[in-house]
Length: 568
Image 1 (spheres, rainbow, N blue to C red):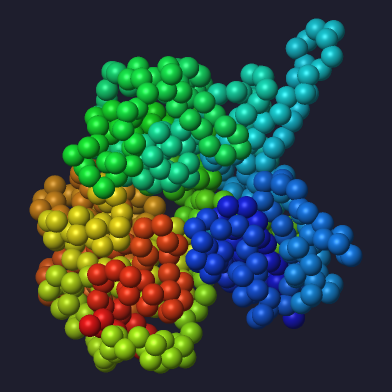
Image 2 (cartoon, one colour):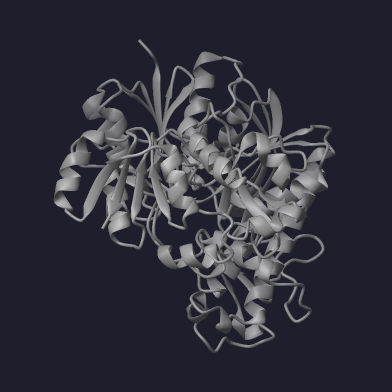
């Protein structure tokens, strides 16, 4: 019988990962099932696994938060749930190793036999140490939350800490191995700016999308000093969650208008808003580059990056230019949910002692469609009609100017839609960004991705050292001669976040792009996540149908069935 390890992240971005005999078999984030953005406590995702697999080992991650004990059995709710299906389950609680969960996810999936992992996020697990100042004074206890960590990684389960930075400390203290400080760190600065711009603390992707509209502005204070310490005069960290700009010390004074006013009206977006977004993107990616440079001095050329900042696709592309001789792998599930994968894989390698290198090949790891629900759903909605179709017919519809949603196979892991839960459009449309942002209810400045047939990527984009980009982790430059052909997916700075699509990875999606290429000469489709603003990505057929009923999308393509649903 197989040995099955289930690991969970119970915090925000609650998630479940299943590893069967060392193979990552299932991954799902709770929000996809509960339909509540950033939902924690992944009970529904756990039930999906428990109803199909026996569980030999349960790993409970998180960030060292207390797990309330239930009456009668004095166990936490996660253990109790798994025990009811698997009485002899082995349970390990390791919330104090949040950053190792990130590092393990990146390392084991990278395909490297050894590497150095850089983990950068807002706040991981809390740790403390004794600060000794060399005098006869008693040692002082200094504590803080993990913000930046560097590990030397090797098989089967070696994660040697080389450097740790902690935020939210009660004192500034540091040595060559670790640092505790009271100032903001890389991700916390991004949280502060995102909050100032009227977004949520963890909606940094919106700030990143706004940043190319800005420029260097001498009236915007530097956010970090030359040693990488946050500017305490204007940036106020609030650990573990959030950070703020101190408007009392802000040169422009307190803001007069609510920032949300300009989220829907570009004419009301001030230069300060745009330039501040530019500033935080520029300074933080430079600091990340300095961290990579310091790591490279160890002689290691394999670098893996995880933690929330790993989702910054603008910075990821910058590293390729600054470090063309390094092998850099960006964890595509860099958010906290991905720690469940890392902890499950680490448990397997610890148990087995294996040194088998298995690079991540697919993110189609979520739930499978229940097509038996289709007929009942259609009967509930008489304004929906279903027809037989072909990829060529769907390509005609997109070429004709219509938006098409696509639902196929298992849902994607991570935050990027990769063709199985996607909204598709013509990438050539000069006003396409505004049209689709309006349909989805998103802010006017937010860009969209392009899915390109893998063999054509170098003819349309400046790939730098990339051989492919299957997980959509880089915003790359569009080649100058192609800019006029990609108006809908080219951002204001001439970049496009791309997904390279291989026929073996996703044959249905590839075939659709290929048919569009035959008709138009453009081997690319406009791709965005199948959801409306504020919603998680759709997961089930019911979610997909509910979404098109609530917006102006009229087509739902089901390639596995060769069917097209049309909303009258």
